[in-house]
Length: 562
Image (spheres, rainbow, N blue to C red):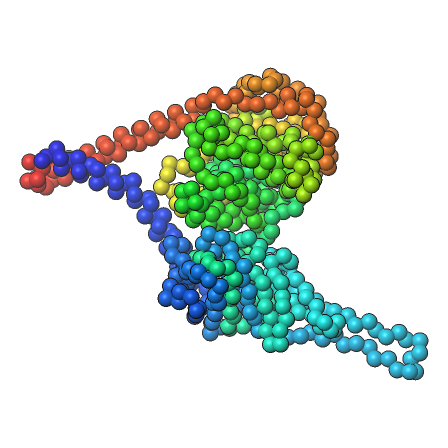
């Protein structure tokens, strides 16, 4: 009896310790919902479908949703004027029409001519455009059949909204941008609007409404994906962009205002029923200053312990084509990617790095993937950095205070971005800093057409315009050893500098391919390091549980222990 009770008590203590952080995360979700809801106008919602569950869309809880299973309408009412609406779709956005009161018509006076004014030409009727000042909106102007009137709807961009003019109201067609978190600014505020949801079924997590010019800063007003990016940050999963690339996003997107496009190899959804991670993904990106909507693939999330195993789970060629598409579509000058050895040994991280290395020469090859070549043209990047790559090492300084974030550093913002991934907080992951085996400051220059780094403190070194980096490069004890190439042992430092033009270039030469090389698929010590830490943690938990049981037994001398 005594031994049995000790085992049960120890198991109970372990369960409590392991699950406490999960419930702390759930509490954070609830608190976030309360803060967000307090900023929203009180709303009255009515619908002809599943009206009993409508409260789920106004409770600020990411665990509840309002569902419908046919084309339906949703009426939104408030006692105050609504100047903007913010919709959090559960899994995917749904096309919908937003019926609004018709805004005032702006009339441009025309010049009247008389018979006496024989030399004066009639004034051509003109149109006037009403623009609402905003940093995240581009007005879409719709002109009526009379050339002297215009009506303007202001949205995030000109592709989001289409307007149909009626006698006493106008219809905005929304939900076509693909934004999971969708913000709609209303040019003519009112207290009652109707949403007609066109899909046969769908789910809304939350709806918020705000008064004119009262939209809080946490509301995500996404811009479309970039046509031409300065930098492409290529991440395997949601949260990898913070964990392994550290201050890259807050520094370059948030502080320097570079055109940064983030893309993901993996989609969180059906495979593990982790659709919620896409919301965490957006929250984290917005937190660190990214404003262009990310590209997310259709490849589901599976775990692999090696690159070889990852090849059995995914179609390698399909993933390479996806990566080539990214380079051709976004035309980045600089690309940041994963450690070829997968950080802590993750097979799909290794696959992501592998696909990027394969895609670099293929993206400028006119014979590879004619479909994306026709749609986006060819492209050759200028530089590619890989996390922890052992050649041409660079150590970034993520400890510089950033004005864009009130003096917080890039490292601190990376930690803040990762904290937005609430479902991952109970895991062992953390943003690794100086001295860590997976140090998020350490990268290697894998590919360049503009020469070797000299200052080694900026991903855009040798690429105009020059960023005014004010601190000297970090001195660190870095091994000068390089990865052994399976194709060639030539290091990048031995190459001839390629032309600096970022225009379309001919296919890579054989010499260049040898320079790029391949990193062997040797196991690293990262996974062993993690297993050792896990073992030590388990021993500590058992010891604490044993001490706790001994303390209770000694203090209370409970008969059940005897």
